[in-house]
Structure formats: structure tokens, C-alpha cells
Image (cartoon, rainbow, N blue to C red; front, side):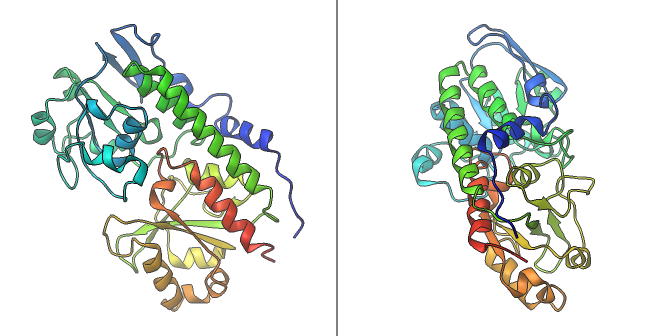
Amino acid sequence: MQMRTISISAALGLVVALTGCQSSADTADTATTSGDYPMTIENCGTEVTIDSPPQRAVSLNQSATEILIALGLTDRVVGTGYETQPVEADMAEAYDSIPLLTDGLVKHETLLEAQPDFVYSSFASFLTAENAGERDELHELGVPTYLTEFDCTYHEAVAGGATFEMLFAEIETIADIFDVPEAGEEVVAEQRRIVEEGLATAEQIEGTPTLVWFYSTAASSATPSVAGPGGLPQTVTEMLGAENLFDDAQTKWPEVSWDEIAQRDPDVIILGDLTRGYPGDTAQEKIDFLKNDPLTKTMDAVIHERFIVVPGQYMDPSIHSVRAITAVAEGLAELGPLT
């Protein structure tokens, strides 16, 4: 394979260009000037009014909690749930100080007991009648909500593709809602630095490797969930000049067959290392399965152990997602020419 040169400035432009002219976050998450309340934003097609900076926020999952902590808002978070990954050392103390409302999904009654004045979720399925409550219902109760633009509809691919610009816009919107715009700017600046670092590493990648992002299965031998189009793994793949073999799927996390994965024969398999405790979630469990299954053990990527392990939280939108660029770039660079 030929050594490929990646222009960092061009790749940074791709972060925005992958969604066309503008991302949905650029256009939907519009708010009045910070400090001007009541503030009204349009978020995932829903108009949300915030009367004053939230003081009793509840975050329904870990990635939302970590964004609030990164913005210096720990003392304004009165509850969280759905912790799925080890919290990194630099925010572990802050995270531990936030009440854990439940080990799993926050239910409506539990949420209301926390008396929130704002609810933040990274997953559409959490803001349903079966879980924390529907958005309209919470708004009628005087509790504004924010749902990440990456998952306005459960597992539906983001129109035009997900980008890191959407993530940065979300961070800045949350900062505006809480009236800490400077903190938002600082967090986004650090995120952009990490992106540039990853793209610099990507210059060492040779050729155009083909990838499958293996996220999870219901059980170690069940139908796998892989990255399709419209999610951050697709964006990372394109930024690195690689090819996602399931970019033709209908959702961002399609369930596919092992027969189809073997037929498409990826050069490299990206393994999500999940620690939520489900069977087959860890990277080692995935590797053990791939090496022992009669079909998958015949795949070239498995025979030659062309695996790149990344924490599961790198695959979902979070403040850690930008690190996926460096993690995958380093792995691909170390593998060198693949044909």
C-alpha cells in the first residue's frame, strides 16, 4: 500500500462538511444570548424554555453527567443514573459526590422525587413514559429537558451524518443554559486540541483500511451490533481516510449477521470494550468469541489478530469521543500495510 498523506486542516474541515453545510446542532440548538432568561431553544424538534439557570439538574446517564462535571456544574446536579463505564480519575471525586438515583435507568417517580429543575439525557429511550417520562409531560410539570441531537430518535442515523461539531455545539448549548459560556468555550477548545492530535497521528496510516466497529451483542454468540452510518464511528472512519464496511446500513447501530461480516471481510475489527456487565460486552470476551467461533475464526482479521480496542464510551457521543480518533489512528498506524 502507498503511504497516504492527510491534511489536518482538510480533515478538520471534514468534521463540519460531513453534515453538508451545517449540522442539525448548528441550526436546532439556537438560544438567546447567555444570561438572558427566559431562554428558549429548539432541541430535537421540541421548543424548550428555561426560565433561569438550572440549580437542581438530573442527568439520566453517565455521558451527560460528565459533560456537566467538565463544565464545573457538579454542585448543580442533584442526581444521575445509568453509569456504564469506570469514571476517569480526574473527575471521579466530583462524580462520586453526585447522588446515584438508581443503578439502572431513572424512572419517572424516582426522577420527580429528586425535584429537578432540568433533565439532561443522551438517549431518546430514557425520555419515555416507561422510563423518566416523556418530554412533553415533564415540560408540563415545569421541568425543561435537553436531549442530545445525536439521538433524537432511538438508534436513528443522524441526517447527513454525525459530527464532532454537533458535540461541541451541545457542550456550548448546555453551558449557555447554565449561564457558564466561558466554561463551554474552554471545554470545546480542549476537545478541538485532542482532535488535532488524533489527525496528526492519522498521517501515519497507510492505505485505506476497511473496518467493522463491533459494539455489542445480546449474548456472546448472538447477532452483533456494529456501527453503521450516521454516528460518530462513521465520522471517525472518514476522518482517518478508512472505510466502514457497514456504511450502507439503515441505522447507526444495525444488527447484522456474522455471515455478512465474514463475507465483507474487514481488514481490521474495532472492538468496543464495555464494562456495563452484560454477557459478551468486554473486548476480551469479544476476542475469545471471534477466535473460537467456527465461522469468525476463519476471518483474515481474526487470524492475524488485527483488533483495535477502544472503550465503549468512545463510540457514543461524550467528552471522551474525540479520543477515538487518536486510539484508532494509533492502532491502524501500528498495523501498517494490510495487503
